[in-house]
Amino acid sequence: MAQSSGFAKVVAAIVVAGGLAASGWLVGTGIENMRSLDRYVTVKGLAERDVKADKAVWPITYVATDDVLQNAQAKIEADTETLFAFLASHGIKRENTELQNLQVTDQLAQSYRSGPIESRYIVNQTIQVRSDDVDAVVGASQDIGKLLQGGIVLGGQGYNPGPSYLFTGLNDIKPEMIAAATANAREAAQQFAMDSGGQLGGIRRATQGLFQILAADGAPNMTEANQINKTVRVVTTMEYLIRD
Image (cartoon, rainbow, N blue to C red):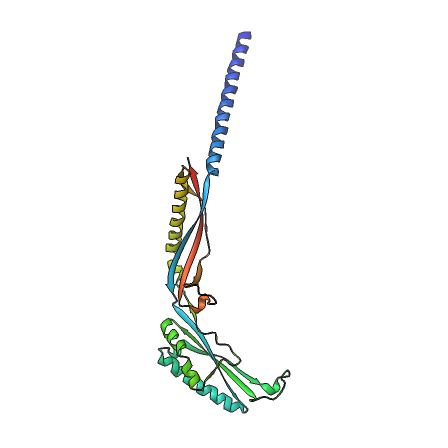
C-alpha cells in the first residue's frame, strides 16, 4: 500500500508539473500575441478629384418704386417679362424659372421712418432660376449689366448674391475615391513597415472621413458655391498591424 501511495504521488507531481508547463506556454504565447497585436501603425490616406458643378441656382431680385401702387406693380410686371426674355436669350427656358417672394412695402406705414420719402411704395419680386445648364447661367450672370441699362433695378430690399453652383454627383464618385484613399493609406503603411524592419499585416481599424467639396483654386474670399470648378476630397484613417 505504501508503494502504491508513493507511485500515485509521483504521477500527481508529473501531472501538476505538466500543467504548469502548459499554462506557462499558453501565457507566454498570449503575451507574444498581445505584443504582436500592439504593433500597428496609423496612417491617413487622401484622395482628391476635380469636378465641375452640374446645377445652378440663381435668385434674381428686382425692385420698382412709385407713389402710386398700381404704377409700381405695372413696372414690376414689365420688368418680369423683360427678365424672362433676357434669360431665354441665354438659353434658360421659362420652365427653369419660378416667381417668388413678391413683397410690397408702404413706407408711410413704417413707424420707424424719419424724414421725407421719395416714393411711397416699394415692390420687390424674385425670379428663381434652377438649371442643369451651368454654362448658360454663367453666361447670363456675366451679361447682367444689360438689365441695368434697360432700367431694371436689381436688389432693392432683397439681396442678389449671384448664382450658386452645385455638384450633385458625389454618390457616383464615392466608391472610387474611397478605394483611392485606402490605397494611398496602405502605401504609406507599407513604407513604414519596411522602414521598421517588419511586414505589413491586416487592417486593425478603419475610419472613413467626411467628403468635402471645396473651391478648386482656393481663391481668398471666394466660397465653394460661387465657383463652377470644385475639388472633392476625402481622408481615410487606417490602422495596420505590423508583423515581425
